Image (cartoon, protein in one colour):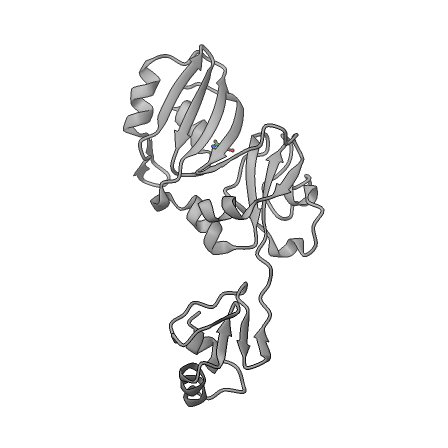
Amino acid sequence: MRLDRFLSNLPRFSRKDVRFALVAKRIKVDGQTVSDPLHEVREFTRVECDDDVLQAGKPARYFMLHKPPGCVSATLDPQHPTVLDLLDEPDKEDLHIAGRLDFNTTGLMLITNDGVWSRRLTQPQTKLAKIYYVETEQAITDDYVQKFAEGFYFAFEDLTTQPAELTVLGPHCARLSIVEGRYHQVKRMFGHFNNKVLRLHRERMGPLQLDADLAPGQYRALSTEEILAV
Ligand code: URA
């Protein structure tokens, strides 16, 4: 929300008061004096007027989790354990998942309370690469590479998938880089060849790589550099 709108929503300020307070440099945002009425205020932003705290600002939280198989990428599920059950953190209801994985898919899962950040990671327009290791039932032949690069028509969404990069690692395994996250996307891509995906593991999302020493079910907070890299 714009700073002027945030201030004028408070009972203590009229629109005129807001203009005066900004011009008189009485408003501080995250510790810095701000007079621009268009300055962005989020739930994480601290806003002060003189020495009064108008909004304390919630801490923004970001975690990397190694999703094990057999758990649901959802915040609540009546039957199965969810990835949020694996987190020993307060206020879990504020957290959400940036880019879901299927029940038996393993690997990198990012969890945050910052919706702007998670949208940047997952929106197809951002074109951030998501890297998967894949094992399949049938052999992966060389003609797959060209088809993944050309894209697959998904009738349900009426779209053709963005070019994807497939690197064949062995007769039944490959590494795949995709920039979208359509429903069951990887399984549907291999499904085009009637080839069932037996193992799917997400190794990376954009600049964020799953730690090699993070065991399935474990998680850690992201560093400031990792948060800012997205
Ligand atoms: N594509 C899939 O088919 N499943 C996943 O879990 C992730 C990507």
